[in-house]
Image (cartoon, rainbow, N blue to C red):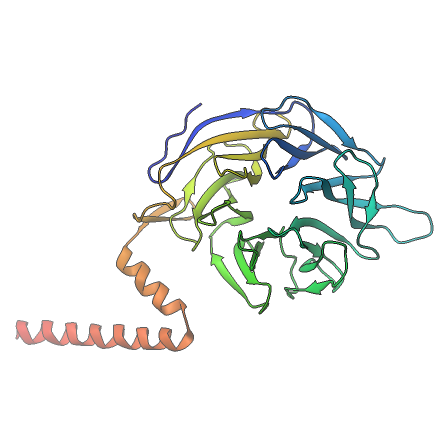
Length: 332
């Protein structure tokens, strides 16, 4: 099935890789040859074309959200802790690629959704240590745990920028980014509908994310600055968990368009590094509104700081007064 799109990116094909129940959360191996994913409560791997499926780890309890190490020799994942006489929580663990030598990295509070930094030295993850899910960063061995975000609402799954300096995530239906050094968050994409699961392509020029509209979840892409959004899936079902291949030519994702959630893959044709400048469309309810580029520039100017917003309002007010005055002078 071909889904042509105007601009820099075209979906040339998409097909189902697994056949089962609750097969979600795909992640690519560093060389792009294999995909790891969660199947029910176990960890599986397969070739990038869906062949050679192998159950890699099953601990009886829930295991999920797997991801490869940067050298491809280990898998990090979240796992439920259910030992007798101790509180129940989800922790982050690591195993060898063959499923052996399990090591628990985090303890005592819900910590999940690990994301390995591009240099392989750190893990970003979600932690409830401060009361609700915030984004934290720690060394790859679990040491030096550092809180990066601090809101009273749960943040979404974190993903690194390719340069390893920032983390993107979702919060209150919008897409945010935060610098791991300054820890100052900012909105990357503000939407009328809920959006989540943002992830950068390997070149750092685009972000894939999930947008939920009218009861369906679809995968979109946008430029790294949050501009020029394009929709990639149109099934009317739920497409989630986008994961770029290391070469940037494919996206693996989870979808229930065949009935049950399974892993799918879309092949991409990239004609430009970014989505070219063209009228932006903003969805609000069932209304599709074409956004004037001049208005967009004025809004960007006003959003940059409260002082600029006041100046912008003053200029607009003066302009309106001048126009009204000139109208009456010409009439009388």
